Image (tube, rainbow, N blue to C red; front, side, top):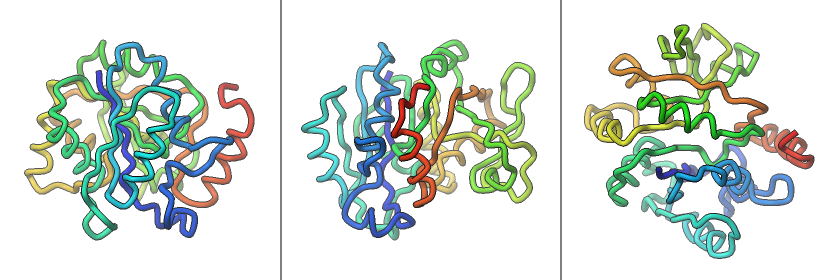
Length: 247
C-alpha cells in the first residue's frame, strides 16, 4: 500500500503565516502539523511508501523538512505549479503522482492539514475487506458547517447512497473528510474522471462521481477532527493538540 499526502495548496486564508511557509509545516502542539498526520500512518504495517505532493513554491521547504524528519521516509513530489492560478487541484495532483511515480498499488490519500485524534487502522482494514473505495466520515454536528464540506448518506451496509459536495441544503450532518482509500484496480478511473473535464479540485468531487458508478463505502472516523483552513481552526487545533491528542 502507498500513501499520498495532499499539500499543494497555497493557504491564502492563513496569510500572513503562509506567505513563505507551507501551512502543513505550521506549528501545532510544538511540532509541524504534518507530523501529526504522519503519526496516524505509522502503525500501518503494509504501508511501504509515503508521497507528499506540493507545489514549486513550497517544495524546497518540504524537502528540507523531510531531510531532518525522524519518522518514516517521505518522498516529496513537486507538481511544478507556482500559484493559485495554475494549480492542478487536489484530484489533478493525485493523477500527477499516479502518473509520475507509476503507482500500481492500493492507495491511501490524506490531506496534510487534516488533523484527528483517532487511529485509522480500521479504515485501512475496511478498504481491504471491501476491495472498494472507502471514505472516512465524521459527524460535524452543525448543518451550516456541512455546507462548507459535503453531505453523505449510506445504507445499512455502509454503502454511500448519496453524496453532495458543498451542498446548499445539507441532508445530514455527516461529512466526508479528506481521507480516502482506493484499491489499485480503481486508480485508472482518476484519469477517466479528469479526461471527462470534471472539476480537478476538491477531492470529494471524485467520490461524488464514483459512487453512482461503483460501490463506495463510508467509515466513521473516531475521536475529534480538525480541518485547518483558517486562523480560527488553526487556533482550535493548537489548543487541542497542546494536550495529549490520544485522549
